[in-house]
Length: 126
Image 1 (tube, rainbow, N blue to C red):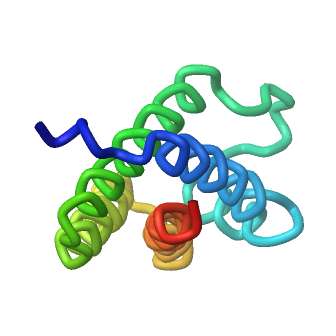
Image 2 (cartoon, one colour):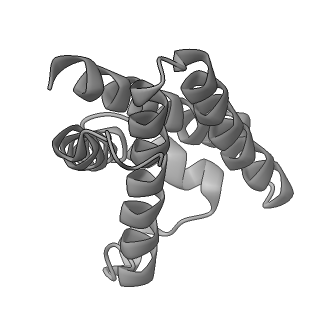
């Protein structure tokens, strides 16, 4: 079974590390201002992060980290890389449908790729 040899610690650490990376990427330290402008997000409304969006983000990160974890058990790194690139491409295509700027789409797609790298690293280290 695919789950029998999964390194669950690495999956969970990869999920948490990728989530924290998202806090950095979408923060004032890095890209939030231009990303928000290019995404049509009003940062001055004071509402902060949307709970459903945060829950969906954690679920997506966990599932991607699980895919990475499963592929690690079979030495199928290329499969993990293809899955990460597919997820990044979905993020970019969704942004294009929503008429985001090229900058915002690059941040979104780049974040998914960076999160995948973090998840692969977690599998390699733990």
